[in-house]
Length: 235
Image 1 (cartoon, rainbow, N blue to C red):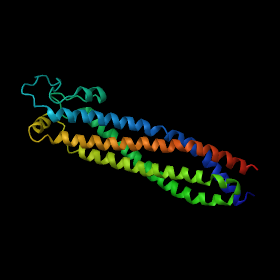
Image 2 (image 1 turned 90 degrees about the horizontal axis):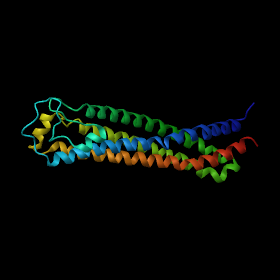
Image 3 (image 1 turned 90 degrees about the vertical axis):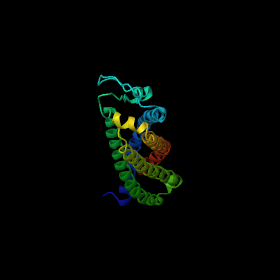
Image 4 (image 1 turned 180 degrees about the vertical axis):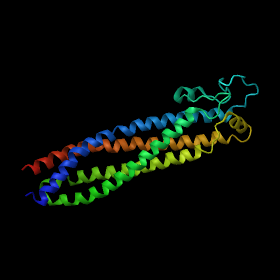
């Protein structure tokens, strides 16, 4: 019958095998999210810059599908397809952006909560590794892996908060052409709100990139630690 020590090594070896592979994904995935967030920020910032100086059009096209020359910015159209049309309300791309950002925030919130709980448990298990003299020189490596992942968990939760708050601010912007044109002569609030939204998304993007870097730093530690645990377990 396996001893408790053998069972512990088996668990640790399993984690070192499968979570190492799992982290390879999470050393890359947040970089894609960072780019998505940067693109969203860049498009919203372009609109904010446009609305900071534009004057409402006095003579608009009778076609409901004509582009609103005073509200559109080519950079936002090229980046996310955002197009304000004379006979339409909020552009469909704005609505889609809100939905996509909401889904990303929910995913980061769930990931952060799970990862924080997992690292709390892993920290406790790692203390038991002090029983193994052959692992003595790699104890810091294992704890650093957990520490990096714990930091990533915290970053994931902050990313979720940043996106959620950006969406809350975005919800106060009336994206209908009529409302935006009225705002161009009444304080330009929408442009100032979009600048804040874009900057919050920039921060979320930076955190996502930092999280990917932290996770990527674990690869060498996982490789060394797994090889040693396997050696001890099969001795």
